[in-house]
Length: 113
Image (cartoon, rainbow, N blue to C red; front, top):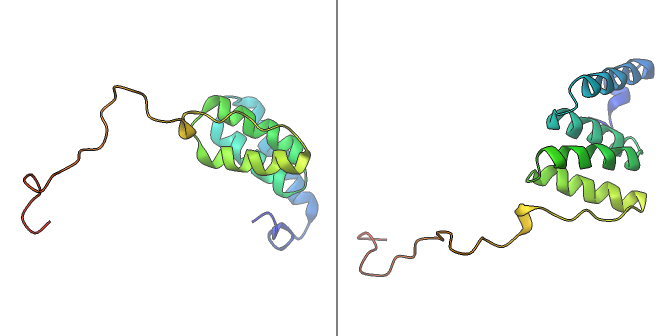
């Protein structure tokens, strides 16, 4: 959508107005991770990677396991020359003493399986 915004918004001012409305909505609901993700996405693909990283960092503070936010944040941080953010539980190994996958041996597998 962002690359083709001129086709959706022939009047660039309309697109600018929509982004400003999104910024106002984000300000009104600062704990809305989805809104921060959307704003970060738009900032990043419009060529404002530092602003994108700020929004993705806030989104990740609210939803640390959001893999989409993590990946896009990393892409735009690299573009902006900003340091990487420590990844969250998504990248961590399983916690010890937690149940793991069930392994079936030949005697416990269903017939034909």
